[in-house]
Image 1 (cartoon, rainbow, N blue to C red):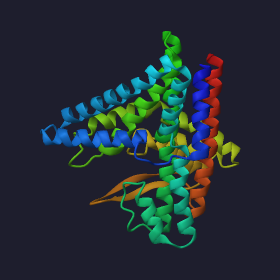
Image 2: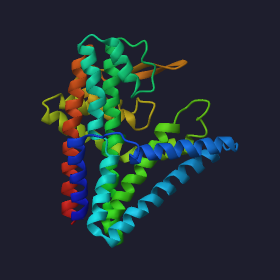
Image 3: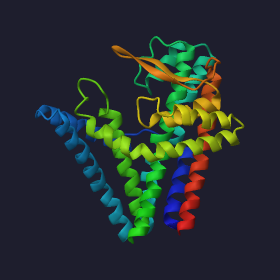
Length: 328
């Protein structure tokens, strides 16, 4: 368990210092290439329904864990090298600073009255149509992105890492490779959902398996995000009562079974409203509002959301490190 704590702490520090640089052999990028390649082959052979999507999901996870087996082998023959490999994989799966590197430039563009550039930056991270959004709409979408991606881009990765470590301890297995394996498997499912988990003509049935798997794996992390964000709101001297009140009342208003938990808590902490009508390519989705704030959302709220989530990330990692230390 001490190895697990070292892996997690080191991976987190690396993310804080280096961010998430994109390069050709980035593990998550390689997952994306594999998913795209297999998807193309399945559609070419006519497996474009639920069965084909199930093959895609299971094949992607199996291939990912197969490659991960090389790192486990390295850990057995050269423990220090194996630990370094696990650190690299967990670091590559935790896109904590990536949340802010995408959102803060949007805030800067809005502060400079460069709405066109802000729309372009936003379009890189959201699926909605950003071309017609005004300043408030851009700021709201950026805040929602930070809140939602905090769970599936970071908190859930750390959760499944810790779950793997504890499960291995209970089963008498080596915790370090099991924890890293859980984290990398989760990231594979999450990447599948990001690529094919859409409700459109192409993916409505093909992406069902990936989307449902991602929903299941994020069920517990999404709900744990609520007390974590509330603790961060307390540390940031934001509206803790509003965070918990809106979180409890509005968490299920989102179309996703999980995304509304973090978003509603952030809305309450910042005294703003999130959600509402969202325009996607070819259609408009009338989403319920989360939060009862009456003030307009400004570029400053993007910075506030980033600050809140930054503290939440630290609180979450420190809590998990404490759990691992106690379990040891």
